[in-house]
Length: 405
View (cartoon, rainbow, N blue to C red):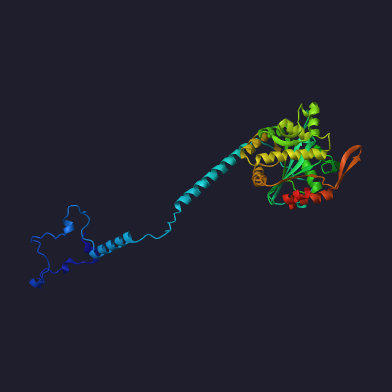
């Protein structure tokens, strides 16, 4: 269709017999006659050369070329400046940073994977809330996690969950002061047992309610919040020590004689006096010594072994992993996997800090007593509650160590 048909063009209005003169005067004819032969264009000397590029159709501007030549000559003759500033390049640093981040991520992922493999071997109990005391009545702090370690020695035909704990130790992970605090609770302490409804030795608190009953009794009498318990037996203790190649302990002559002279009591273990590296069986025997002194010293020996273990693994993550892997099958806890992870990560920076130990009852807050024919430790629970809260939540490790001196 013709272009103008849609634009209103009327071919009948076209003029066919226009008689106007439209010729161009000869002196004004600037157009070339196409029938004339065109002359070839004139090329410059440079364009006449055979090595010029085909895409170059004109010369460089002469003024610009001269200016560029002068600038090049000036740069060649100019003296270099002293201590020139080098151009900053961030590409290498960025690549290095990215590499470091990648390595850290790999280590973290590997660490989490190893932790998951260890935690999968632990035995988990259902959490039982304390029915005898309100959480609001217990002292707590987001920067402190309290875990109750219970050592049991269940005999044959005896339910381990309701047997008397052989040792009770509260481990406080104090991230506020970057330290670990260990507090032993003496098993002969005469206190109120809420699950029984009357006073009795502290280590009988598991009879009615199992391990959670021990947590209930300590919280009720001493007013500190306990996040959960971890229970183990003597087999784990030996595996833990052996997995790190033994622990270094200063053994007294009386302690060495007690163990060596009573093979039946301590499982045919021999000890020598002086600084010794004890294996699992020897460390367990050392921790059970009681006959030569008191339960106070027995609890002290247990804390000494734990401190020696922590000192050995804090500078060697491989030993820490070996310890955890070998101990996990013997552990029982009411803490969940996620809770154990959070506590473990919180404890890592505390391992490099100071470690302190104490025992409840504190000095000046107890006395020996004979109740119903039984030799027990009568405890002033209010004074011990006050001292324990200060020890766990308020005092730094340096303050505690200074007081002990």
